[in-house]
Amino acid sequence: MSAVFEKPPLWQRAVPMLQGFDGPLAFAVFLLACAGLMTMYSVGFDSGTRFPDHSRNMVLAAVIMFVVAQIPPQRLMSLAVPLYTLGVALLVAVAVFGITKKGAKRWVNVGVVVQPSEILKIAMPLMLSWWFQKREGQLRPLDYMMAGLLLLVPVALIIKQPDLGTAMLVLAAGMAVIFFAGLSWKLIIPPLVLGIIGLVLIIVFEPKLCADGFRWPVLHDYQQQRICTLLDPSKDPLGKGFHIIQGMIAIGSGGVLGKGFMQGTQTHLEFIPERTTDFIFAAFSEEFGLVGTLLLICGFIFLVLRGLAIALEAPTLFSRLLAGSVTMIFFTYAFVNMGMVSGILPVVGVPLPFISYGGTAMVTLGMGLGILMSIAKAKRLVQS
Image (cartoon, rainbow, N blue to C red; front, side):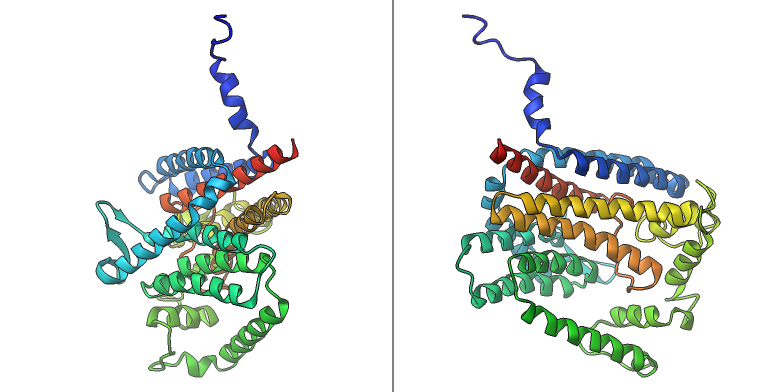
C-alpha cells in the first residue's frame, strides 16, 4: 500500500513540463542567444557590466519562457481582456500624470515605475485573437472595424508619448492578427498603394520637404528629422546623420569574412553609437562579415518559419492567430533593427532580438517564446 502513495522522483515529475517544448524552435533560439552572448562580450567588455547583465537577462527570459509555456492556451485566452484593459488604463495614466524622461512621457509610478506600452506588445495580439475567436464562423466587416479600433486606441496613445518604435511593434502585432483572421486583399491593397505613392512623393520632393523651417503635419520634429536623415544622412554627417553613416561604414568594412572576434575597429574605437543596444547589428557585421550576417539572418528566418509552422498546426483559431502574431513580433523586431542600421529605415530604437542589450525587451521576447511553446504543447496533446 505504501508504494501507491510514493511520490515519483523529481526528474519524472519534470518530464511532462519539458515534453511540451518545441525542439526546432528551442534550437534556433539557443543559437541566436549564443550569437548574442558572443557579440555582447565583444562589444560590451569595456562598458561596465553589460555582458553579465545581458547574461542575467537571458536567464530571466528563459525562466519566463518556461513558466508561460506551462499555461494552456485556454488560460491565456482568459487573460486577454484583463491584460488589455490594464494596459490601456495605464497608457491613459501615462498621458495624464506620467513620468517624463528625455522629452518622452512613457512611464508611470504605480508603486513601481512601469512602461505600460511594453504590456501591449503581448496584450494586443492576445486581445485581438480573443476577439476573433469569439466571432469564429460569423465574421462581418463590422468585426474587422472593431478590431481596428481596439488596435488604434493604444497605438495612438503610444505615439503621443512619443514612442514610434514601440507603436510600430504593437501595430505590426495587431495587424498580423487581423490579416491572419482573413482580412480581404481588397482592403489591404489600397493602403499599400497609397503608402508606396506617398513614399515616392517624399523621395521626389525631399529637398523641399526637408528644407529648414518646413514642418510636416502630425509628425513630431524629431520624427521628421529621422526621415529626412534617412533620405540623405550626408547633410549632417557629424550630427543627426552620424548614427546611420557609421553603421553603414561598419557593415561595409566587415567584408566577406569580417575583421574577427573582438577586432572591429569601428566598434572598439567607439565610432558606432549605441553599439550594445540599437546598433549592435553593425558591430556584429563588422566582426563577422557577410558570412556571419547571412547566418544570423538565416537564424531569424528559421525562427519565423518555425513559429508560422506552429501557428499553422495550432488546434484552435485563437491559438493560430496568437502564434502567428507573436511570430510576426520577432520578424518585426529583426527586420526594423537591421533595416535602420543598414540605412533603409528610419532610426526608431528597436532592439535586435536576443542580440541587443535590454532587460524589458528580453522579458517580452521570453513571454512570446513561452506562448509559442504553450501552443506547440497544446497541439501535441490534441494529437495524442
